[in-house]
Image 1 (cartoon, rainbow, N blue to C red):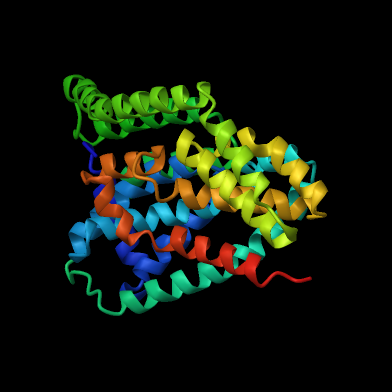
Image 2: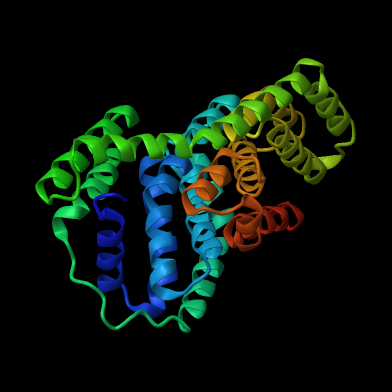
Length: 334
């Protein structure tokens, strides 16, 4: 932000994407990046500042632009072969990743099409400013390097260190930074995450106490007792995963928590393993995408300078995915 990299990226985006495709383009970009790097948080960190800059340039709602990125980030979190939720879900029930991907994709595809179509329609009312500033290619390097290195699977810590060093090189080279402003801006960035860290620690402690005292075990037993038939069993898998996610605020931990019992349910009611893994992953991402105390929404809100409750009403993709998975259970094939 200090060296003008966000503004440069916004100008680049406004140059290459027609106004009426701006929202859909950014949403699909978030989908692609998250699918490639397998992390919703990483996608949010990379793209929310850009989305906020575009909102400033176009007059669009900051909350909607942040929600657009959050929604797209969960597309890859849910589907990517290197996503921790995919790995956890497939290992829990013992199915191949590509089988789970196919089952998963058929559930979320209608949601992607509908939401992207809505963003195209919404984008018809956008008029970007006519005097968009020239592209400063050098200042694009920090963002591009972070995304490209992540796509190649480089460790996230190393990616961020390289990003910091590139920021320093570009900042010093363009006279945007000196040593004091470089260190000062890093300090401001760290300080800005203080509230997020405190809230996350408090939520994790509270939810850990709930789990320690048997709250999750009680929920699991109560839900499983009410499962009747395959449709009921699939709803039980979804409900178990959703409740575990609400209590842990982490979709991967939720899947690991319920994975064993979901595997037992799938065998008892003859549910294909790929279907069970897919249901766990979809329900966990749906819930994680809409809870105000989840890391993704807290991160997006912090980067955009908003409250999480301001973003939630614009989370079209997570809600669309939730509706699609419900429909897939109700109208499942015999």
